[in-house]
Image 1 (tube, rainbow, N blue to C red):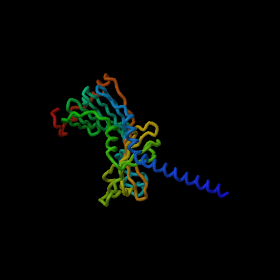
Image 2: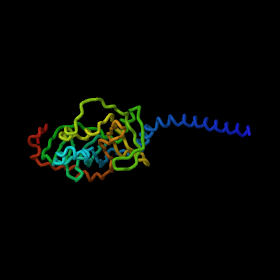
Image 3: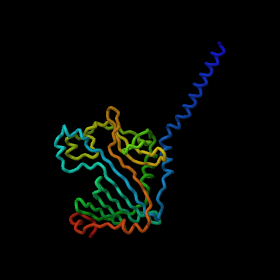
Image 4: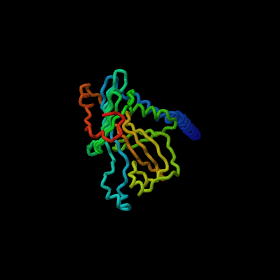
Amino acid sequence: MKRKFALLVMALLLVVFFSILFLRAERPVEAAEPHQILETSRERIEEAEPGQLIHILYTTWVRPPPADLDSEYPYHLFDTDPWPVREAVEVWIEIGADGLITRWRTQLRSDEGELLQDLFFAEGIETDYFPQQGWASRFEEEVSRYEDERLVMIADFLAEADLFRRENIAIDGRDVVTVYKPIVLLGDESRLTVPEALAYRQRPFIADLSLVSKAVRLDFDRETLLAVGKAEVGWDSAGEEHILSYRTFAGQEVLPATAAETVFDQQVPPNAFQDTGSSIEN
């Protein structure tokens, strides 16, 4: 009986011993995991090559005033100008043989498909057209080298030492793996009241949250570990996380060179340049 008891104690000690070794071996892996996620994602991105025309889609979401504010601040109900929440961004980039961007165009549309901005660059000149306001401007802009935005963001995160990860849910409801930058504590600086934030159309709307800290996060697909979104988030005093703004990476493709003829055909009414302070004669 004593022998069986001794064997049982020895077995338990061995279990404890190997458990401690296992936990010690796991800790460095857990500490390095956010950087491993970023490194893996970077390796799996198929970056565009010189000479290609690429087409990129994004959607952006910015936190609006919550609906339950209406009962306390009824004048918000009579705001005839819709509060922009979700917008679509479409980008075309033509990469030269030397890796420099020869032409690019960016269009911003409302959730209803209405064109809000049409920005175009070619031969060192950028033309910004705002069809809703009916005005445009044209100015000189430097030629830049093409960089994949996802790689730039990942490199920015990798430069941080105190990253942390979490299983999470993206803005569209899908399960993701999230890597956070270090949390920044918010001080007692002057904040807008809810009426002020409504009057000034604060974006993102945070006056009702009483945030105590903020951070930036990258969300990754759980299967591919490709980046699917970037968010600005904040935490209130109860520890609840709130998404303040979100940029979804909706897709990227290589277009045939022949598509450039229509892609870069920006049509701006000549009278849109009047009294806009353009630095270049039209």
